[in-house]
Image 1 (cartoon, rainbow, N blue to C red):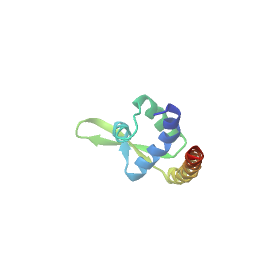
Image 2 (image 1 turned 45 degrees about the vertical axis):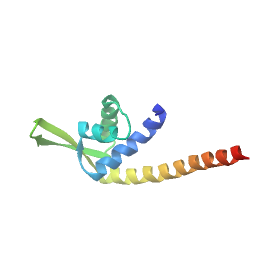
Image 3 (image 1 turned 90 degrees about the vertical axis):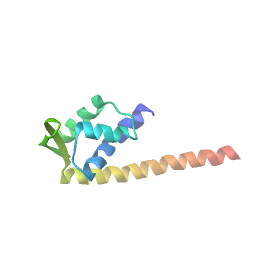
Image 4 (image 1 turned 60 degrees about the horizontal axis):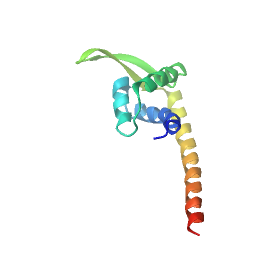
Length: 109
């Protein structure tokens, strides 16, 4: 998949997944990787930025498998931002799909 496509969509995917349930970094990477190949080195800087911008908050929780884990939770500001990004994504993807449809129609003539 095109790297630029991934960069643009990753932030939205992260916000959607965290809005469904609080997640720690590795868990989040695993969940994203089920559908989009992403390096952990890409994810953690994004999580730091989202935290700095107050779209997500963090907390530590004990783990039965080792040291406490840092969980990410969506803030109210993050929920509003996620909703804006979803709407922008829908508008953008609809516009791109129109171009694709028009190209297919033009190509058939």
